[in-house]
Each structure stands twice: as structure tokens, then as C-alpha cells.
Amino acid sequence: MTVLAHQLDRTIVIGAPPAAVFRFFTDPARWAAWWGAGSTIDPRPGGRVFVRYPDGTEAAGEVIEVTPPSQIVFTYGYVKGEPVPPGGSRVTIRLEPLPRGTRLHLVHAFADAAVAETHVQGWRYQLSVFANVVADDTHANAGALVDDWFAAWAEPDEAARTAALSSIASPDVRMRDRFSAIEGLDDVTKHIGAAQRFMPGMRLQRNGDVRQCQGTVLAAWTAAGPDGAPRGQGTNVFTLGADGRIESVTGFWS
Image 1: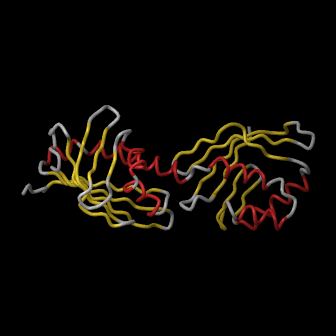
Image 2: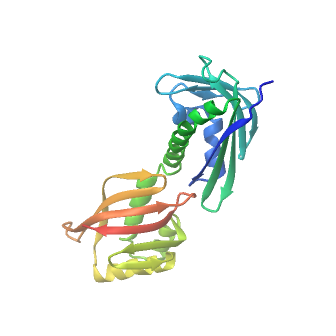
Image 3: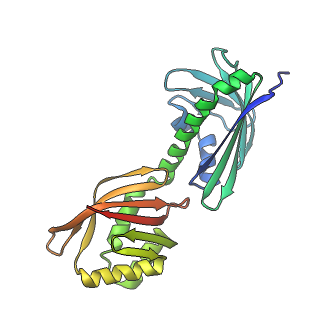
């Protein structure tokens, strides 16, 4: 039996709950989303692991253990046999819940120290891809979330405004811009009410698609008066939590 005495360790934090992260190890389509088209996995002990990298390199292995949503273990090697033969190394991925997401700890064990070293950058890159793919899935509705935030600024009824914001923002949501230093949902609701009194009929509208990277969202906007004419424009930076709700908003006026 080959002794896998050398290992590399990588740890990253992902802004999504463990169950959402673990799906990318057990759903073949999600598995392919972070490895490459044609990659697949049969998520049960003895099931086949197959990776086809974008450059055509192929790797294969076998699932050893699946413990949702906390751990998966599988063997890994290259179909061509070099530098690691099929089954010639072992990957263990553990997930730990955190208040704001999931800590992922990866251990890849090899028989040869030099081969282990050559895989360090590969995993640094691959787990970065993984974090982005999970975030894209977790925050797939980021555009609608931003639209709902802007719509709340035109809601005249305080109770309705509070209900709308509660569905999209955390209770301790923070807001910062040239006119705001607000902490908490209740303060945000009242701040919007004050803005409506001083700027009656003003509406915010998103301009173009949002840009989202691992829970940080950029959204351009225009403020229009009651006559529809633009009164200002800018960009908001939204920070989204692991539950998909808005945790903070920072606004920049152009």
C-alpha cells in the first residue's frame, strides 16, 4: 500500500452556509461548474470522480467517504498516469460552520513531497474558482435584491417599508453615504421616511447589470424627481451575508 506521507493544506472562508457549499461536491452539474465542462462525480463511497480541466487534462479517482454537509474524501490522480497515477493521492475536504459562512479546509496527501509542492498553486487557484462559483449561486438574485432595496426608498408607508426591508436586509444592516451614517433596520426605515419628506417623489433606479464578486455587489443608480428628470446618480456597494441578505450599503454620489 502506498504511503501518502506528504500533504498540502489550504483553508478558505466562503460566504455561504455549509449545506449550500456541500452541494458542489455532490451535484454533478455543480461539480463541473468549478472544475470544467465534462467533469462529474458519483457522490457515494466507491463512486467515480472525474475532472476534465479546461485545457483538456483529465484526472480521475474514487469517492472514499461522504458525510453531508461536513466532509468528503476521494482519491485523485491523472488519467495519463503522471505525475500522479489514478488513485495515487487522497483529497479530504472538511466544512466548518461560521457565523458568516463556512470555513473550508482541504488536505491533499501525496506519496512524494516534490509532487505535493507542484499542486500548491493549483489548489490556490481552484479553490478561488470554487469560492466564486458558490458565491454566484448563493447570490444569483443580487440584481433583484438591489432593485427591492431601491424600491423601498419610494415606499411611503413605514410599516410596508419595514416589512420590505426586513425580507432583504439583516436587522443590523449598516448604511453609509454622504448623508447617512445609519446602524440597524429601524434607523434605515426612518431615514428613508425623512428623505421622502425632504425630497418628495424622488425615486432610485438601477442602471445596468449589477456586478457581484463573493458577496460584494456594485450597482449604478440614478435618482429621478417626480417629473422623471434625473436629479443625481452614483454607485452603491452592497455587502451580502451568507443568508443572502444585505448586511451593509455604501453609496457614492457621482
